Length: 449
Ligand SMILES: [Zn+2]
Image: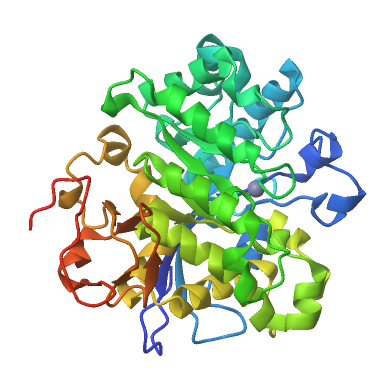
């Protein structure tokens, strides 16, 4: 990537951890069950070329704001939603995979293809392929053999799978086959992306996902436990009007309670993506840019408090981000695309909630770390060795406030609420009780004190 010489601040490294790509021929074949009038904006080719234009990957610079610079280091492809309960849906997942493998191959040989110049195709860093997850480990094996037989298959790119759960009936993720498939993934060092919709479908989807994870890890040695990524922060209700009340809203508390339990499991990650798509039109017309930020902020703050920066991964959900309310255009600046508007909003929110510059520079790139084979295979057992490892701390005292310097300005800790902090910062934290600073019990982890 060309470096911008005039820049005073260094560009923020960014790995877009959630991108869907498809060529026009696949759109024309009508292979996406989600194609309808509501998705009209994205019912045309959205391939590498269109992504590169929207994300300004060739300039590594925000189109409208020269102060916001990022060093775009690539993208993770996530399956596009071809599942339809039939074998043909899974076969479509194979043809999706073939299109990506061809792009990778051409990027090497310098040959352009359907929807990409070779340089754009080089953006691909990993593939989260479609999984026939409900059908168990043998179906996963068979499907993977099909992927491996695709021309130019390179195992280094297959990072994991997704089977979209948000439209599935209750119990789907808890079937014997599904749990079996989840265990299989961990045994192969592959990750699984969980896409549930706590606002649209209900909080039960997240509860069920948590139960599924417990069963998938049951009786499995640490090294073979599947790593899970919760897409889009489980799609919480972003239509709640941004006011002081969000954090006491019953939906927020229910979501946070589930997230808190999920965060206790070190193999669960959360993806900061797609939040703008979930907002209501009013928030943009009445609140503008500030409204959108205040609407997103409480959820992001809570996710980072619970999971720590090392387990929050960043993604744009392009091109679905283009389905965010049209009213957003009222506050988007200059040549902003929905992609760049989202990236800028995230960086501002991270700043506003008090993250240090070091963490702001770490988070948009953090998923890169989880993609490394060694981090997939070795669990974070000795978490103090991990520079960005999370440390579970349970504050048992009543009325305890935890002042984190310099990361988060102030956190009010409920009794038994676990907070994940960065152990490399441990020395910088002071603990303030109601009347005095004191040592409070720290539970979990082999903390050297
Ligand atoms: Zn998506």
